Image (tube, rainbow, N blue to C red):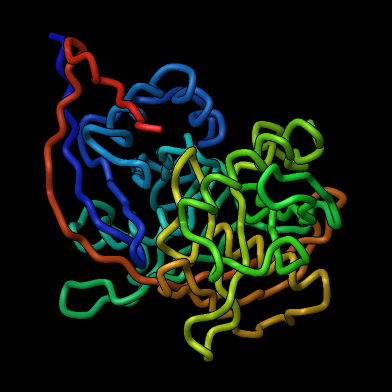
Length: 335
């Protein structure tokens, strides 16, 4: 039979989609989630494409698959699938997947209010608050994050010379702050940012080839996201961003790994302190609350352990079919 079906629950984290696959996911080979991520990429990436891209998804679509843990002390493992690829880590995806998994009794935590989760980027801990069968908020202690490189530059065809730092928060981010040739996201449309980002990311990874490689896991490498800074909507917030990912996406949430990367950058530049609350706004104004709970060492880099707090909501149940006889079985994008 040429048809494969997947049962999914759809939700969003602070505005950005999360599609949790609860049935139909393949068995994966590997001793941990990093190896299983590579196995999925090499053997089952058609599932990601079919579920994330049009006509079953869209340019902003993100998803996750929950697997059993490798360490019996943990509660579960998560594989992230998005239009941008099979990411090592996804903060908004974690918040959304946890919310769905707890509300729908997909994962039964060993300790109420706490989940220990294995991701391709490493182990994380999540706490959550549940009231009347609804998860009110989720706070994750993310993987170690660090400032990778400072004061780099690239020439944009539209903007001219752009200066940036590269920081890691589960993925590598080029962070573009206010400067002569960029006045902030408030002065540009989302389409403008997408256009600029595509070219800039390509040029960064060509100019700085093999410069951005995780010190422990070499399969995590290269700049995958661009984080642009802009003026706050709410004066009580700390900062606002627009995160570009995939080929055409602007994150509607403040982005969990992006918030972690931004906090690492600010901390190591002396602009954020341990345990200082960092309220991060998204392009649409939704918020994550971040804090740095400790400084440590990751390989040769000074690193931080960030916490990210946000919320998610369920908005749909569906059964999706990928039919190999369908000429658009594995999705498409309109450029």
